[in-house]
Length: 628
Ligand SMILES: Cc1ncc(C[n+]2csc(CCOP(=O)(O)OP(=O)(O)O)c2C)c(N)n1
Ligand SMILES: CC(=O)[C@@H](O)[C@H](O)COP(=O)(O)O
Ligand SMILES: [Mg+2]
Image 1 (cartoon, protein in one colour):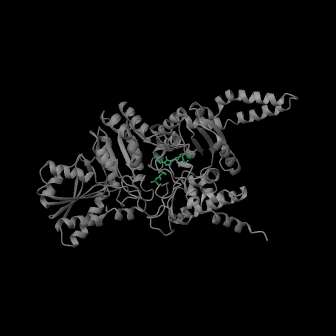
Image 2 (cartoon, rainbow, N blue to C red):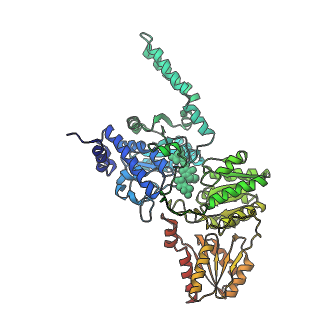
Image 3 (cartoon, rainbow, N blue to C red):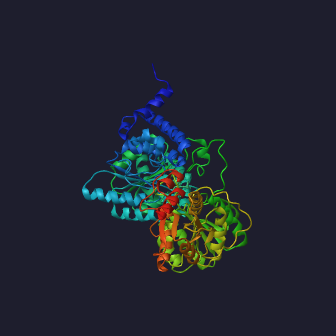
C-alpha cells in the first residue's frame, strides 16, 4: 500500500540527521524535505522569535549545497549567519532546534563551538568572502582538496569589505566559490548604484529573450546552424558585458554563473555539481525570494526579517521603545532645525527612522551596510554646516572606529552618534551585544558620551547633543522604555551635569543609562536593610560631573557604579580615575558593577543581566560588600 502524502513528508525530515543522509534522496524527497524544513522553521520562530524571512529564502539553496558538497570537509561560510536555520537542522541540531536563541540553547548564528559544520562565527555582515578566502589559501598551502564556499546576500554586498575580499580572491586565482544570494532585499529594500545595476541587468529580459530568438533563427539555417550558434555564443561575451551582472564579477576575475532560480533544487544541484569541478574563483548568482513559503513574510519581508516570539493576546501593553522615542524626537527636532540629516546603514526601521525618511526624504540617507562610509560621509556633511545624526547599533559602530577617530573627532566635527542597542540586547547574543561603546567612545579626544536614564531623558539628550558643536555619542538600550511621561518640548540639559536623585549618608549608588533604574531599585532594597544610599543619575560618562560625584562620594565614603558596558574603560573606570585624580581613594571605597572581561552570550535581556551580574541585585550585593 502506498504511503499517504503526509506520512511521506513526515518521513523525510525524520530520516535526516546529518548532511550525509541527503545524498541518496530523490528530487521529490528533497522538495518534500524543503517543505518540512519551512514548516519547522515557521513554527519554531513563532515560539522563540528569530530571523524568519532570511532563513525561509535559502531552504533549497541550503539543501543543494549540502547535497553536493561534503561538510565539514568542505566549508560553507554564511555571511551574517542569520539565514542558517535549515543548515542547523540538517547538521545534527534538529533535536535542539527548539532551544533556538534561548539561554543555554543553540545560537541563531553559526558558532564553531556549536558544531563542526559551522566553520566561521558570523553575525556582522560582509565578512564571508575574506574568511572563505583565508580558508581556501590555508587549504591550498596544506594540499587539502576541500572546497570553500562563501554565501553572501545582496545586502551584504553593499559593504566595502566584500569588495576587498573579491579583489584579492580574483588576483590570487584561488579555488573559491562565492554564492550570491540575491533577493533584492537588505533588511529594507536594498540600496545603492550596484544594486540598481544588478536589478536593471537582470530585468534585462530583452537580453535573455534576444538570445533565445537569435538561437532559434540560427538553428533554422540549413547545414551551418550549429557553427553559427557557436559563433554567436562567442560574440555573446561582448554583448553580455553590457547587459548582465556577470560583468561586475568578471572584472574581479571571477567566473560568473547564473542567474539560477534559487528555489529549483534540480537547477541548483546541477549548477553546484558543475561548479565543484571548476578551478579558480567562481561566483554563482542565485535568485531567491525572501520569506519564501510563508505568505505574510513574502508580502512583507522587511517586517519578517527578524521577529519576536508571537505574543499572547492578553499580553500587557508595553511603553514605547527607546528606538521609537528617538525616531519621533528626530522628526520633531528636524521640523525646527533644517540642518539635521539622519543617516542609517541599512537599518531604517531598526533605528526608528522610517517616519523621518517619509517626512524628510531629502534629509534621510540610507548608505547600505556601510558603517565606515556613513561616518566619513557624516564628517563631510558636517564640514558643509549640516548636523548629521548617525543612527547605528552600538555593535555595528565597532566597524567604523577609525572613521570616528580620524574623520570626526580629530577635526572636532559636530556629528551625533545615536548608538541604539547599547547594552545587553538579548537573543542575538555575542555578536550583537552593545557592551563596548562607552569604553571605545570615551577614550577618544573631543568625544562626549551620554546615556539616558529613561526614554524622556533620551529626548532631552538628543536636543542637547545637537546644541553641542562637537562629536557626541548618545547610547540607549534595546527594548521598551520605563513608561516615563513624554511631555513638553525636548530641552537642552546642563552640559556635563549629573542629577542627584536621592540624598543619602552611607553609600552612593551611581548609575548611567539603564543603570539608574537599577540604582533606584537597589537603593530601595538597601533602605529596607537599614542603609541610607544616595543615588545619582550620571547622564554623562564624559565629561563626568566630577564636582557632584566627588562631593557625594566624600559624604558617604562608599561608591558603587553600575553600567551596562564592559568594566574595562567604561563609566565606572571614569569614576575611579576621577577619585584617584582627586586623591580620594584613601577616603572612599569603590566597587564597579558592569560586564567583566567576557563576551555575553544569548538569552533574554533579564536572564543575561542576572547571569552577568549587571542588575539591581548585583548592585545591592556590591554595596553590601562595602559594609563588611
Ligand atoms: C556590519 C553589519 N551591519 C548591519 C547589520 C544588520 N543586518 C543584518 S542582516 C542585514 C541585511 C542583510 O541583507 P542580505 O545580505 O541581502 O541578506 P538577506 O537578509 O536579504 O538574506 C543587515 C543590514 C549586520 N548584521 N552587520
Ligand atoms: C541579523 C542582524 O544583524 C539584524 O537582523 C539584527 O538581528 C536586528 O536586531 P534587532 O532585532 O535588535 O533589530
Ligand atoms: Mg538580500
